[in-house]
Length: 178
Image (tube, rainbow, N blue to C red; front, side):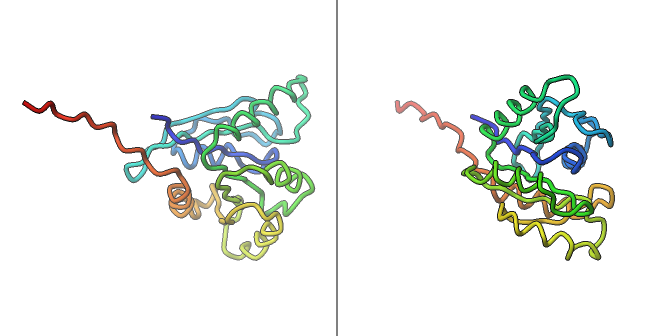
């Protein structure tokens, strides 16, 4: 049985790796202010409410890698999206809607999987109205959250669980009749 995958995508420095660590409750992904630190997919198996899924962090879309690995980073993002059952499209509320966010949204336009737009860095409800501009991207249900302020983690987990494919029933073996 395939474990469903929840893949995190977005432009560089919106907090994808922070979201990954926050949801997994472990410090597994490197978090840095420098763009392009995450280059490969990083994954972790998560169990919540009796459901399992693999959470996958990806590199930033649209980054020009200094070590000339841009093509490989983009290939890993594409593989992640193709294998995803749910996509978390992370944006940065404090930075606001950017042209690169719009490019990521275009790339996700034809993805036929549930997408949740995660407006990260919404540290307080005073920033909620600012996050509303991400509705213009037209990509999935919007949730405001903050890894720094530990805001709306449980709500995001509920949204993920609601969008996962239904669990497959275990293969049952019929008892032989005697």
